Length: 377
Image (cartoon, rainbow, N blue to C red; front, side, top):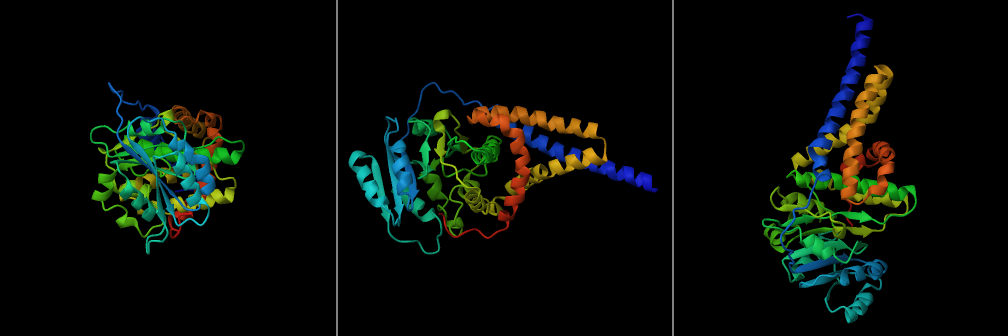
């Protein structure tokens, strides 16, 4: 083989590699993510209102509880419900704040824990106690730094339960604030929800978020709670769902009323530390989920480098044509799913955020191999 032939083959291989990476991306966008883009809630002849226990775990969360707990306590839900706050060994004014709330809101149930559970890091112990204390079969979980988007959150989340449903996955968004960091955090949150909600619709649920998650007590206790993951600080949401969710027992709720809102981190360093904690649990997912997530993330990571290589070393016109195919597919799917998740203000920025995601994977890939942290704060 002469030098010219070898050079042509090498350049062709680069282009073919770029085409294969693009094909993988398109398979995910149209095979998985389009399910969320075209999702339509099943209408029912009449509404349903199950008894619900809302559970919040808090450690030194007095400022967040003062701001967000009223949003849980004033929910417009005519059926039987309760709000349980598990005060996990707080050293601030959480206990006194909760006692003041109790004077006004009789439906508030306070559980004060004053000791740690040996060998069980994170919030699995207080959450398990909260679920045990719950009076009702459906438990609805959120965090102290979250507030429901509307007063109909309980209704919207429990309404997703139909025959056979044992888990409802919600969307936990962030307050819209000025600044690029807020947009980066919200886009990453949207991108994560795009995946776990779409996988659930495809019959392959693999995670949920503790900011907005519901399941039945029976499911929790039949699977021995968090016993198999008690040694991991995080994972009370995603690892538990990964373990017990199936294609038949999982539903999603994405109505405007079903969303919760949190305050995004105000510094890049704080956000990086938060995401590192979250991603440290991904290594414990089921093999099929790890495989699919790895293929998607790796193809995403390779897309821009392979596009640049194909543009420089092969035919830039063909490279741009292939790039445009993915770009148009992304534009359509992102627009539809951002409408579904009520994040349409991000659409004007999606192309820039898409490039940013390459940097994002470089930053957070090491978390997949790092030893999980021992705390949940």
